[in-house]
Image (cartoon, rainbow, N blue to C red; front, side):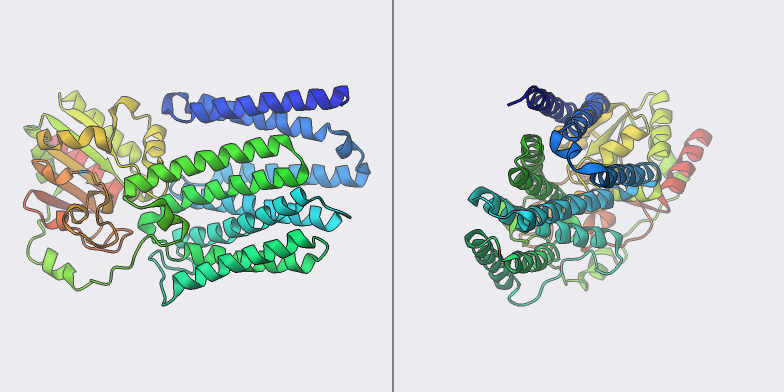
Length: 467
């Protein structure tokens, strides 16, 4: 091993350490920026070390031109996305990036297989893994992206008779084609068929997932993209790609497990695409809401704060859509200036991706100490005078505690119904991602403030100032 190879491997080792410290930093909002910078620095070192490889310089001017063009194009697209993407669209962005990673892994592995005269067994096996996982990740992520955007597919689960059996058959067929590729890597048609079958498998694994379970799906697809990259690392014999892919795959699986616990789902159901069952009981809506929903004005809600000592805000995806995080921060500051304790209750799967609400509130400079996780704050709702539910639905639905079946049955929720008064800010009585009515909206201690989230909070601020 030459001096250059030693330096490259040492740089890769430094990059790996930076990735690990970067992930560690991302576990806490106070160190998230530093963690992000550490990870970016590690990736920069890895790219520079890879480009300094003699094999890259041996590619000739045309090869270097292609590499440079790819770097410039990727940098331009990445910069454009970073500047233009809205925080509300971040889940879709993550799904799309997962798709790109899966596609790159499958295509690179296939290209290496096509150019190899006599690929080793390791290369063949790793290529099969890259092809299967990468294709499932690509098409599964595109389905998740479309469900989140609502372009072609509805965000509700899609089921049909024999779906699980067909999914299992596709998985077995992909594995059988993988064996054919390992036994005879020169037959590239087998790899092409493997890509096609795995792509269909990715679609079938994702369409049964409804909007309520999308945070779990995104975390799992993120893990898949990492595993596909690690497999491609074995194809290319790249240590840094193996390490990086393994870190992404492992952290994604850990996050998936955390999300499964928060949603009361089993990991096997997620792996088999069996989460998010349909709920067709639309007729129960009138029975729950008829004559029981109490509408309130901003002035009436402001009067509740006059004698309140403790207020809890529960943010949801509706807050993200309305971009009301800055306004709710202003309301919280106003209430605190009047001696009222204000905290924010954060459900692990609020929004459409893990940590969605934390990111939005951090963007509004809400003190992290005021953000309380579900397990920490649930016991204090009975001592809460007013709970403001801002655009949340399924995560505060008491049905999860009272029903034994359904899309959110058994899911841990925020016990806001135990507060003295609940104010729900929402445009209408439309259901959440799970597609079921919410008895909280008709509870005796609940007031509904029907309005756009941002406008409602602005009116609340004005009413509180006038009171």
